[in-house]
Length: 479
Image 1 (spheres, rainbow, N blue to C red):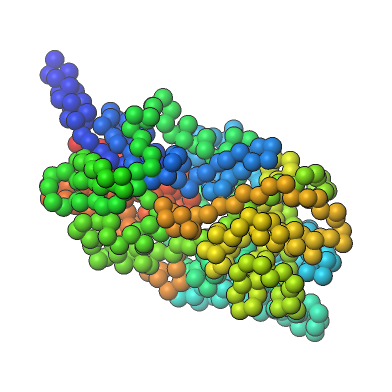
Image 2 (spheres, one colour):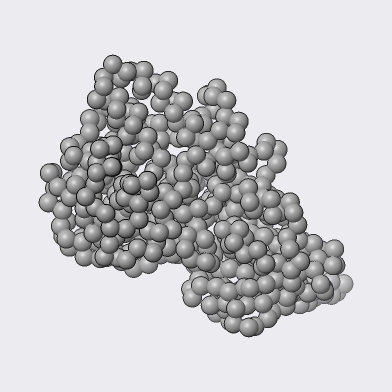
């Protein structure tokens, strides 16, 4: 009888606790799911966008689905996404080396490319490398490898040396920067605490799309009565009473015992007056020290198939002369070089017969996200004709759809990275970001989740989910 009485008391205490979750992305929904699983049902979710998902954005396009946001499941062992959805995942196509074209329309020597590609495919520092990486960038590591290997081999071959030293590095930067979410590879620290989950690092969804992960997270729970869309948080008062009060752009206010804040570190960088009182100095320093920028994905639907069955990627290398003398002048440029020069990787979209995607990086992204669709389309046509026109009869582009994460004030970018010069061994800026704010009661008042607060799995969906579980667990432990 005493046991039953204690259980009822505990259940009543848990049921009476109130939580506001800011953001309905992977970490916010993960936190909500764990709270509901543990009978914490007084949960309010405030989402600034008009739909659930955050940086997971699966949309219909062409004859299937495309991912405007998160694309890959990185790893298998210990990865929540893989563990719950492995039957819906498959390895992505193998890329590189086979279809590399020069800006004069000729195909590059496959042997040379096979020597160069490992420099970017395995662009992180390997355990057996002795290169002094302290304070250095991935750009530094790339040139160290290049100069000590391929350059030595082709130092007497003027034509190939020009490709190796002048033209391939530019392609390498666009690839590495897009993979890491940076505007430049000089911003990317060699040293970092990121850890790969063991297993295949580039798993894609077969047909259902990344949005399916929310079905696995929520399971039997319905959150329709808890989810408030178009509710941008404008201020969080967190140290003035026992309750935390949250204000939204539609002039509403909400109060709760706890707030779990999940928006991106990009939002934290831009919204200086979001917290009252302001965030502690150490947390502000970690926000500044965390890298966050933009990558654009531009999906292209063609009228008819024009490529070969085994074509899954086209890579484009611009000659120095073509970079400076291109005839395409519409849209932004930098140092006289137009934005179309950033179009270097064109990938086939799985399970979508007539759709391909550009992965575009570089600091012109803020301007590209505002570019009119007709200008964007004209740029695509120009590049495809320039590089592939001699070998393929590229068909008409029927439609395009592009991501706009950097200029969206609710995100301000894509995924976090460790900035060059800001890595400190034994100190994690990600973990500092994840530390809660303690309120007047001496208990956590505002808790922080999201991929950028994960010390070892930042920049990934499973990393974001882990932080949502972590912060919900932190609340449950206090009850």
